[in-house]
Structures are given as structure tokens and as C-alpha cells.
Amino acid sequence: MVDRVPDPIVLYLVVRTELNMGAGKIAAQCSHAVQYFLDAFNQQLSGECTACGSKGAWFPKQRFFSILTEKTKLSEEEWERQRIATIWKESPEHTKIVLAANDKQFTTVKKENPVHFPVIDLGFTQVAPNTETVLALWPMRKSQRSPVLTKLRPLA
Image 1 (cartoon, rainbow, N blue to C red):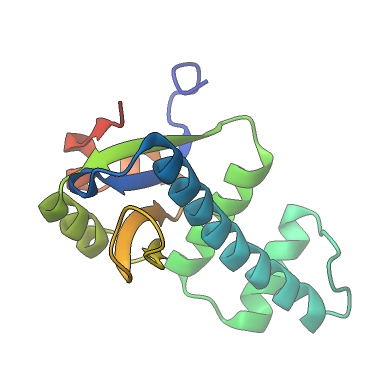
Image 2 (tube, one colour):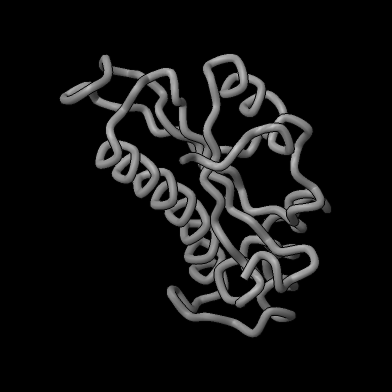
């Protein structure tokens, strides 16, 4: 699907490869990262719907963003992030890409992408407690990814 859409909306997942996690651990950590992003997204949606008296209701995009901007006084940048995330969730032009990063790259990704959702492991298996294992980045157009993301390779 990524190849068919000129500039797809991508939710990037960045995995710390130097932790040497097994495939199952990585899958679980990536799932947690997506869950954290979706929780944040849905909290914004439900909070906004609560403010207009229709908790959980889904509004047509124009009305939703009109309400969102009016009630929350979002900046233009925040509004655009919310718009992109909504398109990502609803449209066929979205995808997820899992990238491998060493510790230095992982730190750079966090600095270059301030809106991210880290998975901080409890340390029951494979990694020490309070270890950041995976980042989910707020969805963005592929053309707008940060410089470090263009250098990372897909997780093999």
C-alpha cells in the first residue's frame, strides 16, 4: 500500500535493537506503543465530544475540527497533527513502518520527534526495569519524516 500512495501517512515504530529483544518481545512492545498512541488520540476525541455533549460520538471531519479548534484553542501545528492522525486512522492511505535503531539513533529520534509515545518496560523479561524499548511517533506524511528516520532501516 505504501508504494501505491505517493505520500502515505505513516505511524513509525522505532525499536531499540541494542537491547537484543526476541521477536515476541518486540511484537508485544510495538503493540503497546500503538496502544499508547491510540489511547492519546481517543482521549482527545472523547474529551472533545464530552465538551460538546456527545461523548463517544463521531462527527464529520469538518464539524469535528471546527469544534476541536474552537474548544481547545489548538495551535495550527497541533491541529495539523490531529488532522493527520484522523486521516491515518480512517483512510486507506495509511501504514505502519517498524524501524531498527541503535541507542544513539533512538535518542536522536526522540529529540527530532517531540510527539512520541515510549514504551517503558517493567522488566519482567529480557530487559531491565524502566527501559525504553520502542517509540511510536505521531502519524505524519512520509515526506515530512525527520532526518534520522530517513537513515533507519526496517526491522528485519
